[in-house]
Image (cartoon, rainbow, N blue to C red; front, side, top):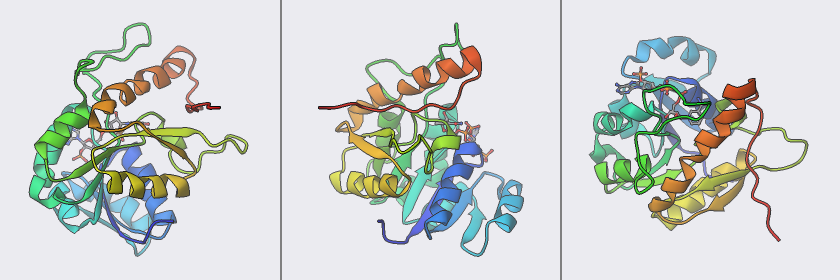
Length: 218
Ligand SMILES: NC(=O)c1ccc[n+]([C@@H]2O[C@H](COP(=O)([O-])OP(=O)(O)OC[C@H]3O[C@@H](n4cnc5c(N)ncnc54)[C@H](OP(=O)(O)O)[C@@H]3O)[C@@H](O)[C@H]2O)c1
C-alpha cells in the first residue's frame, strides 16, 4: 500500500477522471487539472473534500506525485505548461500515447513517433529532473482501476529510469488491482506505447473494449 499523498492529475478527459477517482478511492488528495479548470467544477463538487481543481501549473506545483493524462499531440506542451521545475524530483505517471491526428488505417491507429523513439522519452528530455514512469497506457480508462476479470489479474507494463519511482508506481498498481511488469528503462516505452494500437483494434473492429493484456510466465 502506498502512503497517502497529494496527487496532481493533469487531464480533464476520461483517463484523468478514472485515475483521479481511483486515487480518491484509496484515500489520496487529488487536484485535477485543465487549462480551463472551471470545466471540472461538476467533478469537483461530486468528488468530496479531498478533490480540488487547478491549472496544469498549479496542480504540478501542489502535487507530490503527478499523473499525465493529456492528448498525445499536446503532451510536450502540457509538460511545458506544468513547468519542468514543478516536476523536478517527482514521480510522473505517464499514461499518454502518441496517437497521430490522422484516422486509423484498417482499425490500426497511427502514431507520430517512430520505433526508435517514444513519447515518454520526449517528455523525460523535456523535464530531465522528473521521474517519468510509463503506466496505464495499454488499457482503456474504464478498466484502469480494479478491473474485474473474474479473479485474474491483468498485467500492466511499466518502464522508466528511476527504480524507486517504479517501486512506488508498482505499489499503486497493486492497489488498483494490477500485476506489474517492469520492462526497464525509458527506451522500453518504444515497445509499451504501441500496445495501445493493438488494444484498440478489437474496439474499432467490433466495438469490444473490455480486454486487458496478461503476460504468461513459467
Ligand atoms: N481514453 C482512454 O481510454 C485511454 C487509455 C489509455 C491511454 N490513453 C491516453 O491518455 C491520454 C488522455 O486521454 P483521454 O481520452 O483522457 O483524453 P484526451 O482527449 O486525449 O486528452 C484530454 C486532455 O488533453 C489536454 N489537451 C488537449 N489539447 C491540448 C493542448 N493543445 N495543450 C495542452 N493540453 C491539451 C486537455 O486539456 P484541457 O483540459 O485544458 O482541455 C485535456 O486535459 C491520451 O494521451 C490517450 O492516448 C487514453
